[in-house]
Amino acid sequence: MARILILGGAGFIGYHLARRLSQEPGHSLTLVDDLSRGRMDPDLAALLSRPGVDFVRADLTDPAALAGLPGEWDQVYLLAAVVGVRHAEDEPARVIRVNTLTTLHLLDWLTPAGGVLFFASTSETYAGGVSLGHLPVPTPETVPLSVEAIDNPRLAYAATKILGEAATIHYGVAKRLPFVIGRLHNVYGPRMGTDHVIPELCLRALDREDPFRVYGPEQRRAFCHVADAVEAIVRLMGTPSAWGQVVNIGNDCEETTVEDLLALVLKTAGFAPQIQRLPAPRGSVARRCPDLGRLRALTGFVPKVSLEAGVSETFGWYRAWREAGSGRPRG
Image (tube, rainbow, N blue to C red; front, side, top):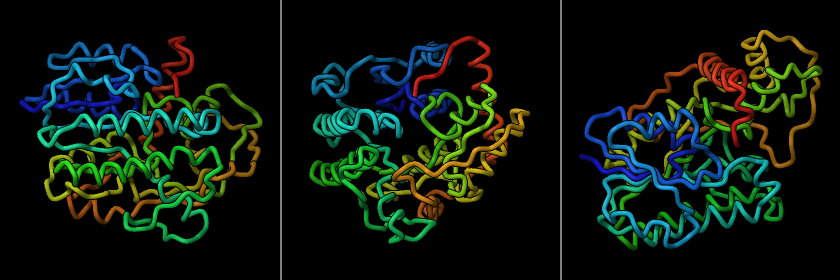
């Protein structure tokens, strides 16, 4: 039986990963989360009711948070982090503290017998170079990592992930701990909170905002449905040749502008407001798309969920949430 530890298991990607793994025979899952982002909602409660799925509520910034857990696992996923532009702009010190301490405490706790570690990184690690026009798009993993303006609160999150990648690599080498670093690119889907462009557009469409504000309509993004992201993560963790590598995770098949994304959301919502086009937020890169050559070579991964199908599913989830009177999901 594979013993699997998921830190951040009540969050967005952590929940979807846990649900996927819980459906496969022979897995025993332990989810650790402080519920500061997620919540004990019906989705999570249903997941935790499945055999072989346990939950531990813990503050991962506490060095003793993992002390009561077994020291040996087959797979460990570090998905716990404070994410989202709003959090970085409003609480950059908290973003730095939580993300850095969570990573370092886990790496101190793990042993070589602790299994393969997946560290969730982000395309924000090279956003500074992209915004300055120094890097190619689609962007490979080999580009230099940079933070354009160290005093910009928005970039606090990127700085923690650059440090996290370095810590994972160097702790991994020193402790002979196998690892995979996955740079996640614009992953979206049900249950992802509100501090991201697709759920934000969905909720404002449900609110019938008119005129409808759109920021940086000319900017381009390549969005990846969470089911595809989870598939890539699972494949990488099951591929020994991927261990020790940094790998982009995303969908490079349907790059779109923010304005076209909005049109798709509004079509799904059956809503045709006037559009108010506004400048992009400070620090937001003009174009982001991953080079997935390494991921494909290692795993044969091909994204399956189209943007239209993924947006439709995501919009339906947020509409059902709103109709259930649950308020806004936490972001």
